[in-house]
Each structure stands twice: as structure tokens, then as C-alpha cells.
Amino acid sequence: MNFLQNKQNLLPYDGEVYLLSNMLHPKMDMKKIISEVEWRDDKIKMFGKIYAQSRLVAWHGDVGVVYKYSNIKMVSHGWTNSLSLIKVHLLATLGIDFNSVLVNYYRDGDDHMSYHQDNEKELGFNPTIVSLSMGEERDFHFKHIKTNEVVLMKLRHGDCLIMSGETQTYWKHAIPKRKKIFTPRLNLTFRNII
Image 1 (cartoon, rainbow, N blue to C red):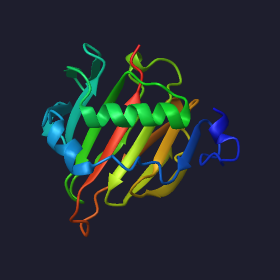
Image 2 (image 1 turned 135 degrees about the vertical axis):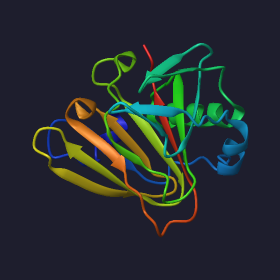
Image 3 (image 1 turned 180 degrees about the vertical axis):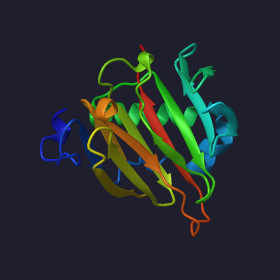
Image 4 (image 1 turned 90 degrees about the vertical axis):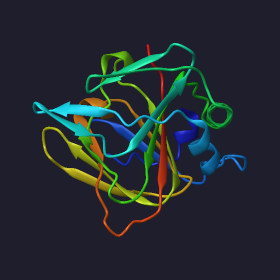
């Protein structure tokens, strides 16, 4: 990935995370994406109890691509026009092609994501995941699974976070609640399902 030659790895060890700013194409429109995608409000089972997910999600990509996490199965029915435009833009800019995207809609600061790893078997070994942020700035945390070391950062509108190498093996990541945030954020996590 030659576009990362002069970029600093934000993780101290056991993984690679890079932050690129201003990665939005002028035609990328958050409101249009929100209106185009097929939103889901699935329940997840944790520690024997059923909970509502603390955000809305949508799964898009090549027709028939399946993604499963927390006993939730999602099947893609194709790309929307907006998501296809972003996919093409990322391919042209980063040289990485993807067959799917998980879109997360954080409606306000109550919507959050607890610590987790994107290490499902269909992502393969040491996957590269590209996470594009739109809308409200949010805190983003990494926590090492063995040392508990924490790396903190803020993701702003147009930021692109690239997670690769052993990141999903050794680090969990989270977006914590923030009671003073009242505006939405979209997070598009592009990935390849094998």
C-alpha cells in the first residue's frame, strides 16, 4: 500500500492502523446514503440476554455476499448508487477493492459500539478494513487484548481509518457513548468477504 509510505502507524505494536484525512469525494452525500440504504435494527444476544443494537446498520455489496456476527446473518442485495460511488473512489485513491460495506448509523451520542474485534472467519486472516467517517466527530478507542493498553483518537468528517495486519487479532475497538452529542454520524466499513 504505497499511499501509506509516509503515514505513521497509530498502533504501538501487534497491528497496523493509519488515518487519512479529507477522503470524501465531492459527490458523497450523507443524507442521500441514509435515504438509500436498507436499515436494520437487529437484536443481539450477549451473555444469555437479548439487547437492541445501539445503532442502525445496513449491509450492502456484491449481490449474495453474506456476513454474520453475533448470530445475525445479513445478505447483500447489491450496491446503492452512493455506496458504489464511494467504493470506486476508494479503489481509485487507495488501490483497494472491496466486495461489501457495513454502514453504521449513529443517530446521536447515545448510539455507540462496545469493544469488539472484526475477526469473523469470513473476513479471512489479518483482514484490511477501511472505515470512512461522515458527519459528527466521535471518539474511537483501541484496546489491546493482552496488555489492555488503550490508544485514543477522534474521527472527523472525511476521515478514513485503515485497519490491517494483526489489528483484528490483538486489538478491540469501540465508539463510546457521548451524552453531549446530538447530531448523527455515518461510518462505512468496507471489507472483503471470502
